[in-house]
Amino acid sequence: MSKKRPSIFEKRSLASLASALEALEEGFGRLPPLDFPEGDAQAVKEALLKVAGRMRDNYPYFHPLYAGQMLKPPHPVARAAYALAMWINPNNHALDGGRASSAMEKEAVAALARMIGWDAHLGHLCSGGTMANLEALWVAGQLRPGETVVASHQAHYTHQRISGVLRLAFEPCAADRRGRLDARALKRRLEKGGVGTVVATVGTTATGAIDPLPELLDLRDRYGFRLHVDAAYGGYFCLVGNLSPEARRSFERLRDADSIVIDPHKHGLQPYGCGCVLFRDSSVGRLYKHDSPYTYFTSGELHLGEISLECSRPGAAACALWATQELLPLVKGGTFAKGLEKSRKAALALYEKLRIDPRFLVPFAPELDIVVWMAKAPAVSASSETARSIFDRAAAADLHLALAELPVDFFDISDAGIERDRETVTCLRSVLMKPEHLDWVGTIWELLDRATSGALAGRKP
Image (cartoon, rainbow, N blue to C red; front, top):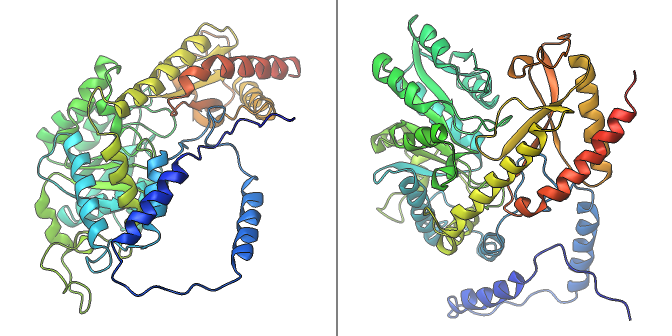
């Protein structure tokens, strides 16, 4: 008798979903029953099996051996709540399209605002960080028309792109050797005048670097610009207790920003797409004011469409986030926060292994849960080739890392005897954002060690 293979997918929540669906149906018991078409069950099954077959052509984003890009599986309660809402398919634009889910969105967003220390705020969910940042920069442009937006060279490319869409002047500013916005370079630019908004990043995409908020806020007090914080990746880390003192100081000043973006579909255990934009001054809601001849007449309460640039938005995303925060409250020391602490411990554990290995060069300790490193080689170009080889060999062994192109200045290549024949180097990058990564660091290291040995053995002399 063959032994059943252990599952790699969580399926126990399906029973809870079925029970919740029965409870939801009871709430509409006064309606006449519906007749569903007969004979389509097999066709539905066949279509789903075809989808399952197509979806096999994916990296295993849900598994701890996927340690590459920022991909984290939704919590089972988020998946189930999202699916449950799909039987209603609410639209969180006007209240007549999503009354219950709109209320849940307001409650979930208020919990995110309280997490960073705001009792009063204006905010809502978005399709993701790009749209959330667009709204923040749109508000900034309305309040500071004709003035320039400045962000670090290591900030997400979306800020420059969004500024172009909004026809706002944009200028990149230098980053320091740890990938953070260089406050001294910013000060020199501010002295020239004309800067209306500075974007600070809390958790850069490439390295997880945290821009120095205390210094940037001091500059804001002196030069009077708006400070927008893109905390799409790192925002939830304000709950954890194992940050460095320097990182902790920046998180403690989040509450002093003018606007903040957080992505629940990154560390918030949510399906795509779920971003959130928050404004400290709720009076910016006046900038969204518009008339709709048919939408906002079913209720005198605030419709989310009245404080959002997006119109139709999935109420299911709000239901999923609300359910997750109901199960895992956003409190320091709670289960959710401890999961983030595990991710950071995993990154520090991998960093220590890399730091003492003579085959690698690591520029700095991770500030969150992202680790970057380069392979030692005679020249930067050779290091880049080796990194790509390690990447391919690791993937062949089911360990999925990522590649990143970083400035050579981040690394002490002269001390390592590496020729500078390029200004950027292709590095290996690992995002250890799953709590389970802590238990898998040993396996990850074994596979990385093997892939590196193979790459070095095959390197041209």
